[in-house]
Amino acid sequence: MAPTPTTSYRRFYDVNGWLFVSIALGLIGVFMAYPIVRSLWMSLHAGQGTVVEFVGTGNMVRLAGDPVFLKALQNTCIFLVIQVPIMLMLALVMASCLNMPNLRFRGLLRTAVFLPCVTSLVAYSVVFKSMFSYDGLVNHALAWLGLISEPIPWLNDPFWSKVVIIIAITWRWTGYNMIFYLAAMQNIDKSIYEAARIDGISAYRRFVSITIPMLKPVILFTTVTSTIGTLQLFDEPMNITTVGTVFSDNTLTLSMYIYNLSFKFVPNFGYAATVSYVIVALVALLACLQFYAARERT
Image (cartoon, rainbow, N blue to C red; front, side, top):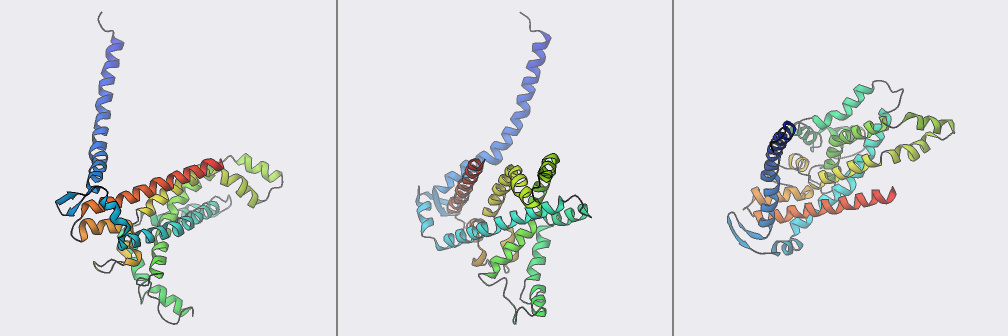
């Protein structure tokens, strides 16, 4: 029985659809699947450069006694615990302010808050490094206000260097999260607020009982993405607290340690791959906990 025209067209589109999908699958395989499998293989080996040997779980055991790794893990967790909540709360506050119906210059303010997200990384890192240098603008301003008697070593002190990095990350990415909150707030049905207002519910209670519950999916999304970004933190410590080619242990992160192991010192790609899987494990664990917490509150 000869195929009908409809059958011929269906076969034609099926073949072309698979050809179209195969290109995407090929790219995913080359640039995602293969690196994952290759890095897993590398994590089971150790050595210098291309001379490697199979060590099984030896790299994992080595992590527990590596003081540099533990320092990088500690710094990364400090940035995660402090910076992410501050950034998300600021983003929520800014979005609430920009969502006020009678706010003037709304477009200008929204652009000003979002602008750091699209600012050149090198440019803003140079600005921050200059501002927080020993004789920079921040120390001059604090001295002029009478808040300090001598300059603060922002970029060299173990405590203040972390503060600078937290300020830099918050300044850069708060506007990014704010856009998501603002878009979600503007999609909430205004009749819900109107009914609550008629019932005499205060603005604070409307925000807590209506706005926050409506924003739960967006809050979960921004929390997960901010967590992932902070665990992979590299750019700000690399460009702000690095002096020449010398990294500061005060702001050393897991990603910077991977860079050191792969390109800075004698290459040890196997151990670097093992450290990268620590980041993967932390991302998976924290994402699962966040999704579980969001489900429990629903």
